[in-house]
Image (cartoon, rainbow, N blue to C red; front, top):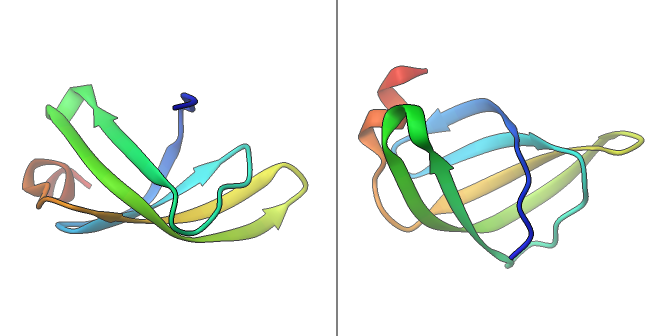
Length: 73
């Protein structure tokens, strides 16, 4: 699985919208890691929206609740 650092735009207990530098396909599986909040969760790409050249907003559905991450934003 390729690694990419992201900026988090929006977080809920079951998902997130992150900004990425490459395009992803809906349905792809991902591993979300946020060391500061102690979060490590598997998820799935729900959508990938083109924002600008080489910039994408990606919607993630997480398979477990990630309360520490959601409450820190």
